[in-house]
Structures are given as C-alpha cells and as structure tokens.
Length: 172
Image (tube, rainbow, N blue to C red; front, side, top):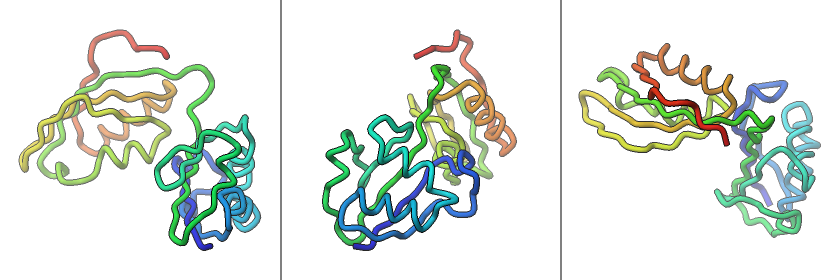
C-alpha cells in the first residue's frame, strides 16, 4: 500500500529538505519501518521513536492520534496519511495569550497555519474578527518558552502586530 508520511517541525531534524515522504506498507508499523529505511537521514530517529511505546513523538493516522503500540498493527489503505509530530518536552511547556493585529496586506495569508507548522508550538484561537481590511485574533500559544518567543518574533517580522496579554505565563 502506498501512503504518505509528513513531519511537522522539520527544523527538529538534521535535514529540512523534505517533510513529506511516500512509503509503502500493509500496516502502520510497516510504513514507519519503510520510512525509516528509505529516508534514514530525515526519518530515522523519529520513526524509531514512533515505533517505541515510550517515544517522544506523536503519530497520527488520517488525523487521528495513535494511542497504543497495538494501533501500529492497523491495516493501511491506499492514500492514507501518517503524520509524525515531535513532542514538546522537557517540562518547560508554557502557555501565553497574545493579541494579533494582522494588516490588510497579509490578512488573506495562512499566518496562523504557518506559525503552527514553522515552530514547535500549538495554537488555539480564543477569538477572532477577520475582514478584508484587518484580522484581529486572540490567540493562546503553547510550547517551550524559546519556541514561543521565536514564534512571536516570526509573526512580528511578517508585519503582524503582537501584543502580549499582561498576565503571568501559565505553566502546564
């Protein structure tokens, strides 16, 4: 069976040359092993961790989280999509609430999608008002402090006004 494997957070790997791979396998486990064998440089460590019950990655099959090692034996169908998402770890996970003012020249761009995929963070829209003129978004971001700061800087460099809500950071 031919399926796709995609990786979020490509900078966490030694290479960022590809983040979507085509692999074969009758089961999820077969496909991850094929990915590890065929794309060792990019997928070796991550697919090994995905195959381990104590791995530091999340595996999703067609958008649904694989919750146990037994789920790796699920049969695949042509066109299934596997996602490998490096986990946010280290015990330094934090939440920040920010307000975004997205100007007219970029309001139609997928800025929130991009920031969520460019950095190892989780975005949660708490409220938004979007028009052709401006986008106003109340956003909660979760991740390691360094990643949160990098994501905020990235948004600002793209012309988004970022206002941090004046409250202490929330540690998980």
